[in-house]
Length: 308
Ligand code: CP
Ligand code: NVA
Image (cartoon, rainbow, N blue to C red; front, side, top):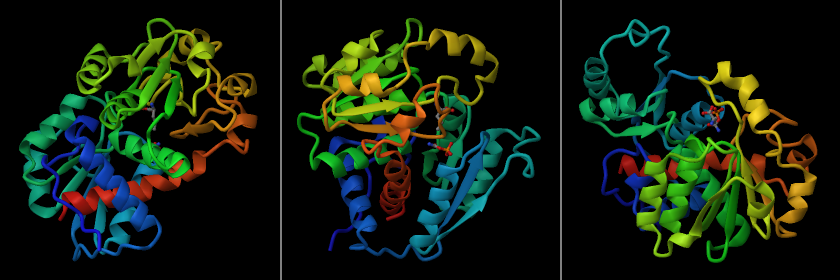
């Protein structure tokens, strides 16, 4: 029977913390969990959840994943714990890692996540920062694999903000050797550090294409992906971003430009008829809810490896 392998790194802060083989291993575990071919008992291990931003999918999928693995979670809501009072991360991290076996953190500044990992003696998982959303990317590539059976010749086009979700898609895509095209308005390109890292991983750095033209980027793509234009913490930029992203909506016209069997992904939550039309979200090409379900299976795979 398939067994979870220990990961080389203790934490999952970035897609870069995994090797290509480790990504494939987690996806294989995820698929086995999903098909009920694998059952692992973590013997009451405890996952602590620290969410400085709202969450539905990430929070609930982690809770259900731990429950299915025979473990449990503690919701360390910052407003009801001393985190909200501003207790130094180095103190909180050292205390929590004496109670919990693993900690998942959603916060703003990626450096704060790294600070938790520095002081925690237990694995730390990135449940989204302003820089990356690596758990999301695992579920996304699981969904793509379910559709196309392998990653060879898959072209993934992300249309939207070159932000956390796009960053993890780029980095995980580079590990898997997938062609990733990003189309964003000028000034919203992905972080240059992320682009540099991805190009170092790709054997052929033509596989990463950054442009400001959604129609050319979508041409012949197998996957069209988008995310909100204004992320959590950017609420005050909403008006400007809505204007700047005009023309970057995934609508039926754009979908026609992609491969005829292209699938549509969105990490959710969506603003319907902004970054994606209602019709495209509900179309038969949409795999958006399968993708959301896959958060659960991918995180079961990840937790099994981190806690094995
Ligand atoms: N996709 C995602 O992370 O959703 P939540 O914000 O609901 O967790
Ligand atoms: N880019 C979005 C993703 C939400 C899952 C945000 O950070 O708000």
